[in-house]
Length: 258
Image 1 (cartoon, rainbow, N blue to C red):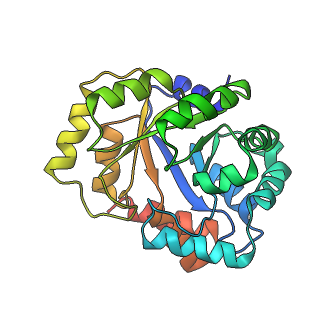
Image 2: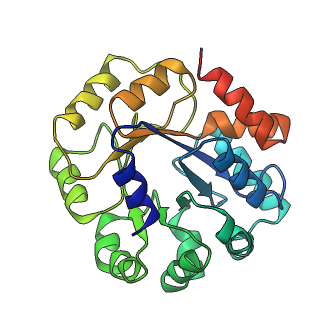
Image 3: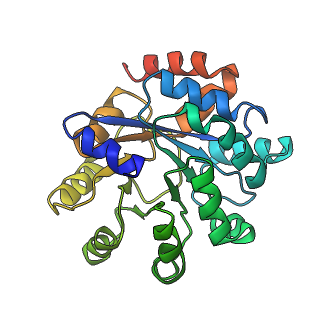
């Protein structure tokens, strides 16, 4: 069974926590150590960012991390090499998050094959058109048992959400707001109404809520309305500040209590 599916099947009564970080930032060679540290510190799933020069969905924190990673020399080929080195040491699901341009340049078939060889369970491609997903990417990914995770936002129509739910597997990435990534202090009434609306749809896929989660209020709101929460910008900021994943986790867990 794919590790993503197993994670949700075995934790239906427990709220999950996933973290994002950008490979190659703050330093080029710490990808494996960051992943192993996060697993040891209780994180359920990790999104590993593939740096890109023009990340449309990302706010300034993750954009800056991507710039640092590229300057450090991170490439998709190097990332796969780093991931293969720790494949047998990591038990939790790893998901690559990157933009279509980089993946197309690498090659869709080659990308999916490299994911399997490196122990990757899924991929999030924010700018992948759903038509291209259905016609080009999904048939290849399915052969490799790789989950392509699709995003929904408050602007996504019910018809579109149900279509995504029908034709994807693993989980649905529920973006908290129709904006770029970045920490928020609270989720307002409009976001809460959006969460309730999606809950009432009774989708078959579990959902993870991301974008803006940085404190106790936003974490509890996300976990109370989905299978779990995804934290990106807050952790990337802390990791860049202290240059140490263990210390960054201490600071993150402390922030999530307030």
